[in-house]
Length: 167
Image (cartoon, rainbow, N blue to C red; front, side, top):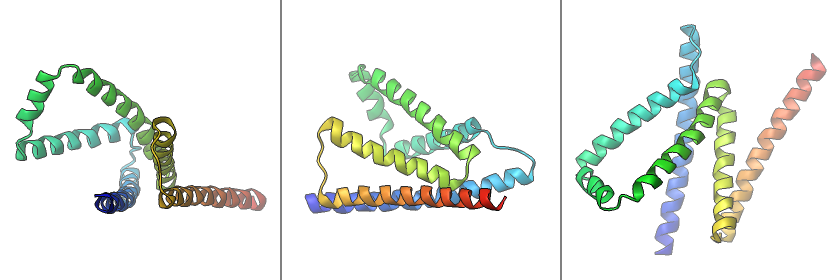
């Protein structure tokens, strides 16, 4: 029940953080390699190739699990879902545009800060707009994440002040 859901939630959070770290390392390496080749990666190149390979991955997994037919059948039986899928896809594309712009033009720490901030605001919106509740442990996690972001911003501001004084 509740304990299983909490454990699964913690596993997903840890997995998300690990993948953020892997992505940041990959992003840094990719930008270094493209810089060596004299190419500046463009946000929509990142976005296209990421979504292209994710689409192939999703299609292979859906095919392997035998979910393609049932998915098509569900959409055929419930045509009203298609407008919701299209709205979701459009919102996703707009959100991804910002993320891939940040990825192409800033360092991984900035991207990590932006994505973490987005996740925090998503949780807060869910709580305040949908009336969801959060345990003391959950609020502690949000406070810890906010503290981490604020400390990153303070450190960055201190470094920029030190540069301006020495320059």
